[in-house]
Image (cartoon, rainbow, N blue to C red):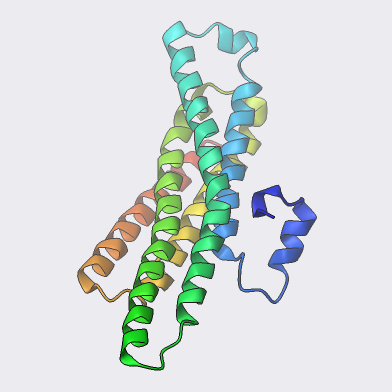
Length: 210
């Protein structure tokens, strides 16, 4: 059964088991999906309000496009929940390959590097999608139903959690990457994303005045 098809209690109970996966990577992706879901809700509770309908048509269309972005991003985040666990399991399978002779050792090493790259790719894409999502929040905040401002604030925190959690998963898997140049590039990109995200998070939460 796919993780996304589980009931909430089934998923959390699977997390709370002695299995190493699903773990932080899948939870980070779920946080991203929840963050997008809250921003979509803010949009849905705004479209039919008189205040929103009174806005310039161009402003309304821009707002709707941002909500559409969150709708597509939510689906992407959901797909990463299973992708992350799949990538981890592939890495574990690679480590279990036989290494009784040189040929097997070489094949095992290649498989480990391939799986390591995948275990980096998935959280890296979650990290990138998270920062892109945070960049879209402000437009929604500006014109959304103010009664949803606390929900939007939680959405921001969920997206930031998705970003920081996926960043951790990228960084921990870099230790298994033999390509030092590529490892440095990933590390630098993660650092830049984290720096921007921290500034965005603070700026956006400053708008949540209750």
